[in-house]
Amino acid sequence: MVLDTDAAYLALKARDARFDGRLFVGVTSTGIYCRPVCRVRTPRRENCRFFGSRAQAEAAAFRPCMKCRPEIAPGLSLMDSSRSLADSAARLIEDAVHSGQALPLPRLAARLGVTDRHLRRIFQAAHGVGPLAYLGTQRLLLAKQLLTDTELPVTQVALASGFASLRRFNAAFAEHYRFSPSRLRHEGSNHAPATRSEGLRLAWRPPCDVEALLGHFARRQLQGVEEVDGLVLRRTLSWPHQGRRLQGWLSVRFVPERHELVLSTSPSLVPVLGALMQRVRQTFDLDADPARIDPVMALLPLPLRPGARLPGAMDGFEAAVRIVLGQQVTVKAARTLTQRLVDRLGTPLETPFPALHRLFPDAPTLAAADPEVLGQLGIVRQRVKALQALATAVASGAIELHRGAPLQATLDALRALPGIGDWTAQLIALRALAWPDAWPASDIGLMNALGSRDPKHITALAEPWRPWRAYAVMRLWHHVETLEAPR
Image (cartoon, rainbow, N blue to C red):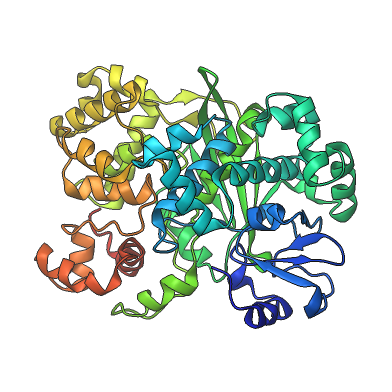
């Protein structure tokens, strides 16, 4: 929802980063649209048109600014507004574009349980453009970022952005931006000469509690798989692509003064850069809106730390395995069990970083493992059954563990597996599905923080924290982290 025009202009003049990704300004004298944080001279009020999305601005024939780069602005979180169905459709479109997948409107509507016509109507009302126009904007903005931040050949950028041919790609650019992709790459380099060597830039809305976020990953890091070094997190990763799995590494560097992080990857993962960008946004909760979340976190019986974020997962299956191994044990004990699993079943990988040399075992590997071997690692029989049932379901495609998976159906499928109860399912929803209202009521850490052993009582206490209870979980855990409460 766009602010009234006077308030929007004030936000633009103040370069207020709280509105980044929620407000865009089209300047009629230049035909360009910008983020509210753009550092160029503030345009005259009568030359400004305000939009609630990039797609609206582009539908009005404005081109994206080369300096502030609207394509790196924060996007939508799972609880952005009451128009949740339209926002779910927008997220699914964005994920499909970045993953290089086709998502025809009938399939999108069926996935959301509505008709094509109803989806078009609510989408137009919520976002100001139809779903096909939104899809086109997302493809062009992904292409613009890849052209600006990478050295990928133009043909490869076209394919990675979902265009069937270079001819269609060039035609779309000429129609929407009025110049060719090669010219955009040249002009983008002139505006930001250091960007391409730096990596892919992704922005967040301030404030962001970077210390707590990276601290969560640092306390759980696995040797060989991941490393937290100051404001940098590096890890190994395998990713599905065209019937095979690509293997490599990625590095994320936080730049708090710019409200951005910078993503770089091994050359082997370049074909899936779009999908990795989306997963990084989820893993570090870059699309969160602190202006909505922090007032609710102020209701907790704790000192307020502004900018709470949900630590997600680059690999949903890996997160689920860690959560199962964390049943009824401390963070330290869970990390020890998981490390043994990685050392025994993880695939060796060469990287330029001495700390990174092994991949986390994937679902087919864990499903096919000898249960006796898993038992020798110190994993009790009940959890071995749970791990292998989970791995089998994920490997077969019966369960998907990512932001676009249907919440209730996935929770039901998880609870139907042996050894997986509501605590485990809720934490998987928090970490892998990015569900901001997840609430593991039987968690001992929450009970310790809230001074009660009654799950019904602490659930009642958490009622005022809806729909952000998962953020409350992270805040309460952070508060008791030094006690190594069971997770």
